[in-house]
Amino acid sequence: MPFKTAFYTFIAIAAAVLAASSCVENDRTMGQSLVPDEYNLALGTKTFDLPVTNRISDSTQASNTNNMLIGTLSDPIFGTITANSASYILPYSDSTDFGDNPELLSAYMTLQIDSTYCLEDNQKGIHQRIHIYKLTTPIDSTKIFCNSITPDDYDPTPVTVSDPVIYGSGSVRLDLTDEFAQELLDTTPEEFEDLNLFIKRIHGLYIEVEQPLNTQSGGRLNYLTLGYSTINVNYRLNDPDRGAIDTTESFVFGYTTALNNYTTTSAHLADNQPGDSLFLEGLSGVKPHIAAMDLKRMFEKWIKEEGLEGRTIFLSRAQLTFPYEMPEDYERFDLEHPASIYAFTSTPSATDTLRLFDPLPEVYDVSNRGAINRSLKEYSLDVTAYMQDLLMTDSTDIDSSMDLWIAPLAETTDSYYSTTYYNFDTGNYNKIILNGPTSERKPTLTITYGVMDE
Image (tube, rainbow, N blue to C red):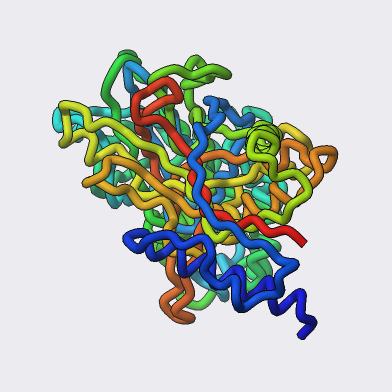
């Protein structure tokens, strides 16, 4: 290993040890006898006021492998979230043959609502009217965003006999129209055997919830676990040997993937100069935003003020801290705040207006992933690698793809491989009011750093 590389490795380890030993006197001469005289090492910490704003993204990813999400929820500050959902229909059987001229008798769907989310007890059983439509375009790899489904993607005529009403968790039976049931009864043996053929003809269903009359406060979100809602088609099979036989063929609605089409109305909270409050809403709602260029300018100003131009600066730790104040209604706070928040970058997919939120890659390497700290009333998250890269990147190479968005973090574990994954939370709705830049306890960036001359 070259001496210079080995030296940098030693310095990084030494800085990390010093950062972890906050209760020990900081001896800035420590280690000088171990390195050549031409190297000069200094260690320190610096806390910056965070240049944070509130912004809305044009879109977020919305594909979900666990639940369909439908419903509305209104808040006097954040506004109303509306969640609709689309998913596949697939046959249970891979070898059914309806024979010649099967006769349709009836068809119905059983929607299985497994759990609900609401903030007020009197909203748990409110009625919500839904409409269910047949998709006319497939759910493909381009449709992964919260606004991917438009009226052009479904038939405006509902597949249900009437517009059903849901009242919360449990099973709901919905009678289907003969027209839609006949399409399922037209499934060929080849389509039963090859699901790709089936999906080409039957693209799936889209559930849309009616907007609430009261958009000030209240509402409920409903979760439908994939794989538990069914469609039953009752028909008369004309068997040449046994005669007419009444039987049933079943299909699953909601399989493997749901595309949760949600909208939020918190754009009025976007602010380039937020005051005492900083707003964070899950899904497609308003979020704290930190421009990479603002961070770079902040670093450059500090480097100039400290006379550190031309010197090597390395970080052993960089931590973002977002304080909050506990509201009077702590029970509601417990229901609505996100358990963890983290820093995401927003990268374009297909067009500049369709963007994906990805957590910083170091989320897998750090222990501090933005879990709420109730005793300190704050969220703190480690972003050391990102900040080090930003320090080393020339200003001319910085663009909006390096900006940070602070959003709820979802943690999932693959039990088979014992692997944990971290992603933008597309399945849960959370919101919180954090302290803003003019608060006494404001958002900050704290770095522990080393400076070296060569």
